[in-house]
Length: 102
Image 1 (tube, rainbow, N blue to C red):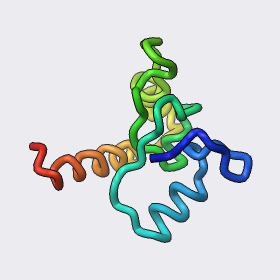
Image 2: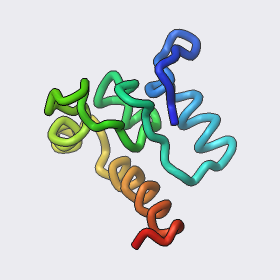
Image 3: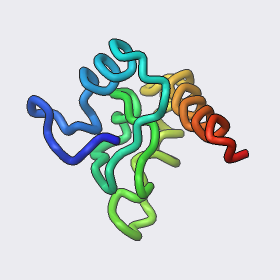
Image 4: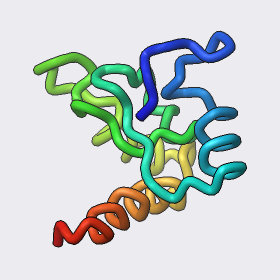
C-alpha cells in the first residue's frame, strides 16, 4: 500500500523510484500496489507503479475516478500503454487466485 506521504518531494503513490524501481524491480515484488484511501493524485500514477486505487473515487462519494474512464482515455490516446493495464490486472487477479477467492 502506498501512502499519503511525500518521498523526496513526490507523493508516495506516484513515486516511480520507490514503486517500480525498488519494490517491483529490485525486490521483485509480484503482488499489486494499492493506494491508501484517497492517496492517489492522478491517472499517471498507473505509470509510476500504482495498480489499484482505493476507494476508487477521487474523493468520497464523488463518482469521479483517476482510473476508470480516465485510464481508458489515457490508453486510447497512447499516454499509457495497454500492456501496463494488463500488468495491473494480472497482479490483482493473481493475488485473487492465489488466495483461493475464485
